[in-house]
Image 1 (cartoon, helix red, strand yellow):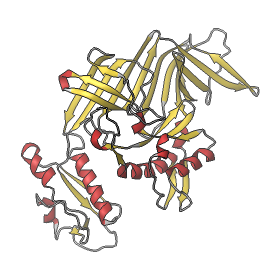
Image 2 (tube, one colour):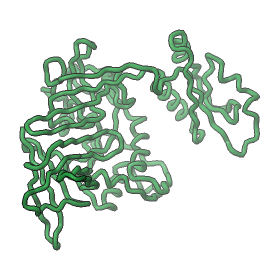
Image 3 (cartoon, one colour):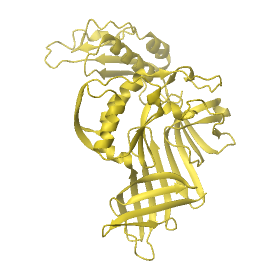
Image 4 (cartoon, one colour):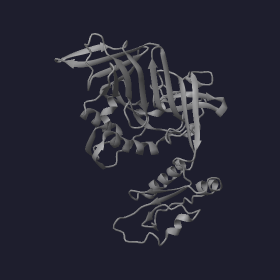
Length: 395
């Protein structure tokens, strides 16, 4: 394993580039499918020539075994009485933390148009994933964003697309997962070296990006293959509920919250929405809570959560939202973190085949977050994985 790191900066209107590979160590590179930039941290020794001048905005390029891994800018430099500097650099997605105000109207045909507008406005490089040729993207609903980050603006519409898009894997090959029969599509943002990509995670799910076909060979991690350790956890202590109460309150509505508060304790009554304690009629919901209430009450007792609705959507949208909420919250949290020998093809949003005989796992998983650590001749990685990327859970 070999790596190269280059640091560039402007001096007297001239670009100067230094190879710091021999004086850099403790390199850590982290990516996540959640809206946040890739982060590269490293320790930099003082160069003997005193010619290196790393500072805010210095360009950092990192290569591992000849593969382009990271391209970004320095945002933090720390030091102390020693001659060692701790440097934090972010990839180009860092600029999606910029805030802006934007009116999205009928001129935005779909999320791809919005993405291109943002990329061009901030003078970045960007491209859309191959999913644009296959997915019928919906026109964007009108919305005004005021002082929101670019991440928030795009995430608003990505969430809408993610909630409605599902596709089945079209192949005779059998790559079974917990949800592979009706694989949830998920759009996410990734910085591929210096290019920001709006991608569909399915194409990283063991598929060839150009043809969309499942690959003939896949990366295997697990028993006796790259893995050095793992941590599997199951709990109902964090964001697990078997009773959900959906509440909608109008500030100008003068009604007693106590008059019909008994609806909250009816075991088979799932409240669709409430207005100051009153059930709002006309929602048309047929959810009675039996699946989530009765099946787990004897084991968990009652774990309840109130979800406040910002507005009353159309009946079918409310139904879908409630069903999705029930599916998400009614299951125990299962998390799986894996420590393994580093592999440069693994990043947040990619996938690999996992084999853990102790847990009876023998199927592909998605990478929710990935941290790669490079030191001398060692490359290790820590991964958080999930089988259902839409829910961010290992089921």
